[in-house]
Image (cartoon, rainbow, N blue to C red; front, side, top):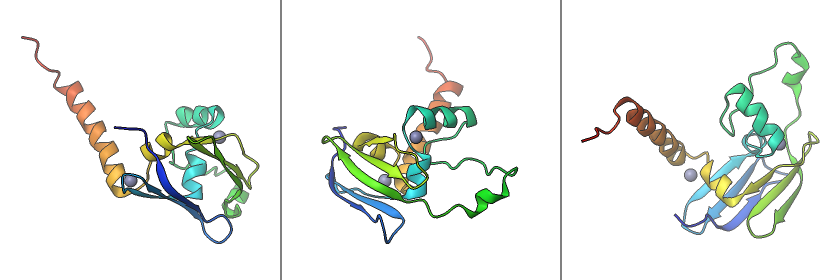
Amino acid sequence: MSAAQPASIKVHKTSGTTMEIAWKDGHQSTYTFTYLRDACPCAMCNEERVKDHREPGQPPAPDTSNPLQMFKPQLRPTEVAQVGNYAIRFNWNDGHQHGIFSWDYLREWCPCDECRAARHADDDLEQDIDNHPPRVQ
Ligand SMILES: [Zn+2]
Ligand SMILES: [Zn+2]
């Protein structure tokens, strides 16, 4: 597959809660800001996810020791900037600002049903290969 390229990007920065990407191959992706924040590809967030065994976009388990977290304000980007011609960068209203989302990464983690199913089909396939290794003749 060739590298993912967006045809148009809409970030509903002030009035909405999503970013929409129309891809050049005709696919459409809608990401909520919360999803993007939980999918932040920076080293720090990545490490947190690996530690918790989370996929990009999967929210962390609620911290029950701190009930105030339930009243977090709606997550929003305070600034959105394109990085070269390959990525987009967000500054978030929670102070986080180091994540650079490449088009490839965004396309890979597209949260639509179709892409989700495709990702899980891969899981099944890998599991299937693990369970039924090809026979060596
Ligand atoms: Zn991050
Ligand atoms: Zn998709």
